[in-house]
View 1 (cartoon, rainbow, N blue to C red):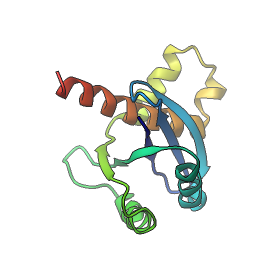
View 2 (view 1 turned 90 degrees about the horizontal axis):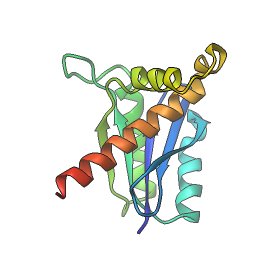
View 3 (view 1 turned 60 degrees about the vertical axis):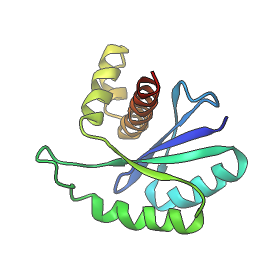
View 4 (view 1 turned 120 degrees about the vertical axis):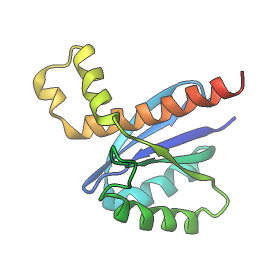
Amino acid sequence: MSRIIAIDYGKKRTGIAVSDTLQMIANGLTTVPTHELLAFILDYVAKEPVERILVGLPKQMNNEASENMKRIEPFVRSLKKKLPDMPVEYVDERFTSVLAHRTMLEAGLKKKDRQNKALVDEISATIILQTYLENKRFASL
C-alpha cells in the first residue's frame, strides 16, 4: 500500500503528517514554510508512494469557510495541476488546534514547547490524518 499525506495549511507555515504504508497510523512529518509547500509535496511524492493528499478544511462554527480558504484553494488548484492523477480531498479541521494543544499538555510538554507553533501545526496535521484513517476503518466495518 501507499501513504496518505495530510496538510494543515497555514498562512506562514504548514504542518504535514503522513501515514504508514498500511494506512493505520498517522505520524507528524514536518512543518514547512507555506511558500515552500508545493515543492516539498512534489519532492516527497517523487520519493514515496502516496495514494492521496488530505487538506484541512478550515470551517467556522457556523459551517462557513474561514478566511484561510482563500489561500488554500489556489494551493489545491496548483497541487491538482502538478499531480493530476493524485486524489486531493478536503477534511474538516475544526478543533484540531485545540486538540493539538490538549495533546501537548497530556504529553507533559513544557510551556515553551507548547508555544512552538510549528509543532502545533504538525500535531494538527497528524490529528487530521488520524481522524481520517479511523473514520475510513470504521466505515469499512
